[in-house]
Structures are given as C-alpha cells and as structure tokens.
Length: 308
Ligand SMILES: Nc1nc2c(ncn2[C@@H]2O[C@H](COP(=O)(O)OP(=O)(O)OP(=O)(O)O)[C@@H](O)[C@H]2O)c(=O)[nH]1
Ligand SMILES: [Mg+2]
Image (tube, rainbow, N blue to C red; front, side, top):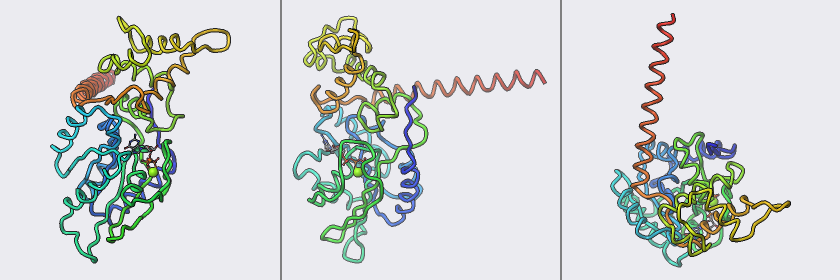
C-alpha cells in the first residue's frame, strides 16, 4: 500500500510558509539522520529555491543514527549547491549552539540591529524542529512531543540579540514518488499512524535490518537468521516473545509494533536505514520504471492511432 499523508492543516501551513519565506534569510531544514534523503520534502526544496534562500540542513537525532553513515550523508549533502549540512543531537546539551553560527555564514550580510538574522525551521513532521527551537532559545517554549504534527501554526521567537527563529508545522506533500520513502518515513514515525499498516512497515524495516544490521536482531531477540526474510523476522519475534492473539495464533501486529518501537527508541542500537548507495540504487530503479511507463504509454498511443 502506498503511504501518503497530507492532512488539511498542512495545506494551509505550506501556503503560509511559502509566503513567510520572503521575510527569511536562511532555511534551516531539519532532517532525520536515520533516513536523511527520505525525510527531504521536495516541496520545501522547491519553495526555498523559488525564493533563492540558502539552506542549512540539520541531520538531527544523530544519537540514534549510525555514525559512519552520518558522515557519508554529510558529504553527500555538502556537495549540493547552496547547501551546508551538519549533524546534531538535540538530546546532547550545548550541541544546538553550533546552529546559528552556521546559519549566519550563509547570510553574511545580515549583521547589526537593523539587519537581524531571520531563520525558518522547516521539515517533515516529528524530526525535532520545535525541540531544536527550544534548545537554541534555552527555554521550553515551543510544544514538542513524539507524535507527528504537534506544531500546527507558524510561530516566531526572538533571541536576545534580535535574531528571529520561525518554527513551522511539519510538512508533507501530496504524493511520495518512491514507495520505499513512505515506508522509511513511517518506520521513523514521521507520518501519522493512520497512514500506514504497522506490519507492512515493520516487515520492510526487518528486511533492511537483515541486510545491514543483522547483529542487532540477534542481540535483541535471540533469533536464528539463517534463510530468514522480513516476514520471518516478525514471525520469530512473535514466537520468541510468546505474543498470541485470542484463540492462540501468533500476534504479528504486536511483534511488528515491538520491532518498530525498539528501532525508534534506539534499543536496537544506532541504525541508519538508508545510505547514499541504497538511495542511488532506488533512484535508478525509479528511472527504469518511469522509462518503462513512458515506453508503454507510447505503444498504447501507437495502438490507438492504428485502430483509428
Ligand atoms: N533521540 C532524539 N530525539 C529527538 C531529538 N530531537 C528531537 N527529538 C524527539 O523527537 C520528537 C519530536 O520532536 P518535536 O520537536 O516535537 O518535532 P517537530 O519536528 O517539531 O514535530 P512537528 O511539530 O510534529 O512537525 C520528540 O519526542 C523529541 O524529544 C534528538 O536529537 N535525538
Ligand atoms: Mg513542532
């Protein structure tokens, strides 16, 4: 099932954010370090580029991500034009101090009381935008919570030096091009729970873990991985934990939720579910699919023309 999530308040928020960008010097795009490409919202990029604003990309939650892969992603983003990327954990005291100096480097002409720096936090839901705002302000002022779409309206905060920080609601977009991106966003709890089926998302996550972090599965669940596939992992977790539904069958739903929670809260270790390499392969596959669709459409048009 394709995952898409674009609730009404986001449509309004997107319009407001696009307007608000006119009054902003730098966009601070907050991404999830565990799925840095899947958590890029293409409409945010388009809005930013339409206004010609530089971007500071923050790979947030690096405390949960695989440090080696974070380094690879930082090089990948830093190679993009008009972009500066840094890794961060809002859970580590003081790390947020590096954000505004980095943003300032992207807007060197904004100095002095008449030219205050104005930055806007943007990103998909639940990546930690409001947490980062609070960390920079050193106050618990913006609402935060481990639930996508906590912030519903754009808010402006002012620092003692006059800097303006805009916190914005997490934004999704109408159609996710790569189905696997929807699964990665769901695995990382960045879309609403009603938009996906836990078992489907957990099975996809299990496949990634089998391929790249099998030792975490063994360490956490003590399961035998020989010849195992994604559904097999869910089955094995249900079996090992004795999760049963009424009537005695295995409770795969509970096993799926257990795997998702263990991954999300870091119990399985520091894991990044996509790498620049896996991303490249998925984009290639998408291009092949698009070329196939175009060829099919051409054939169909030729058939129609012959009929006529
Ligand atoms: N482990 C970890 N958790 C973080 C970090 N930053 C934020 N969080 C958690 O992520 C969750 C979401 O944080 P929010 O700041 O509400 O996220 P948001 O991007 O403002 O979300 P919306 O307003 O819904 O778009 C909260 O549970 C935070 O505690 C981090 O660096 N590491
Ligand atoms: Mg928020």
